[in-house]
Length: 399
Image (cartoon, rainbow, N blue to C red; front, side):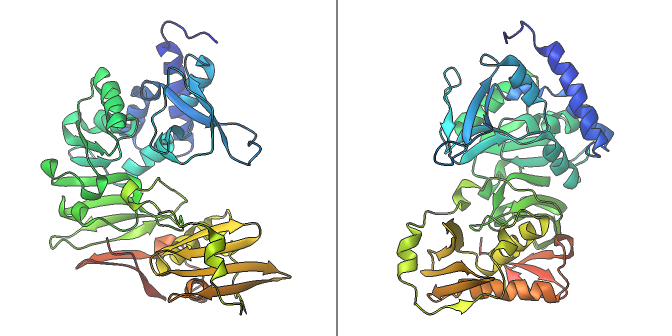
């Protein structure tokens, strides 16, 4: 389809439809955020992105199709105003949107987050008029624009680790009249020149709460971030910072995940077969199936994060039917091999990886399978611990 001279008429209609749909889903209960969604043109921030094809390729990899206004105007504009995350970058490599190519597989490293989640993040952080905010992860700049529309550009600081990404976001923001403070910076360290803030909201995930963020929030201020790790377990937490620099807050429900801050991404661990070759021949029968933390359910999503707290340096992969756990920090490893109505466990090294995970799963069951909202994260004197009234504390990795 040819691109019209002025897509704004089509965009305004689609933007209104998206706002109505989000409101019907209960996402836009706050009239201030609804007005922002109705005003900010998302298509201006996503001149190009990738969408997954229906079928995978011969190696089982996802086929990512480039979408631009020049390639398919209708598909581009409809996707821009759908409640969908739009992938804009893989493996840190910026695409040539003048001549984009189909991709096979790859790790997404930048995106335009689905609008419902963007609004939910700002709302969950209790962002209101008069607040100064730090956004970690500018990305395309769409979320930044919503904050500017709601709070005013002077109250918004947004940082991005990728200079090319920030340059594109800045161009889009400035062309629309939004003038927030923008900087190329690592979210792990926040942004001291504009501190202190009333709110910090991170659009990437961290293994633990960065101490710099705690120091850059006014007493009584709040930090909303996603915790993640090398097992790809996720949990969101809203922390309130006290005068003495300590913080605590409850985990939030749902199954939200974000790309890791690049300095917190999982390291390469080599060939699982090499790790398995060094394990003892003796095995024992698992009390819990690994599917308890891998199934596509909300409870498994939650339990994966709890398991990750027990073995924060472990990574997991499945080769054939065998589940491998590898810990490159301690040199520990484990395999789980399926049998008839059972899983056989072999493990070696100083940390008994699956044994630790099973202890957490058993304690979780004995506590009545409590949801994420019943857990509280406490941050004090450099220690970070997840606590529950009926479960032993689970420490997060040292930040």
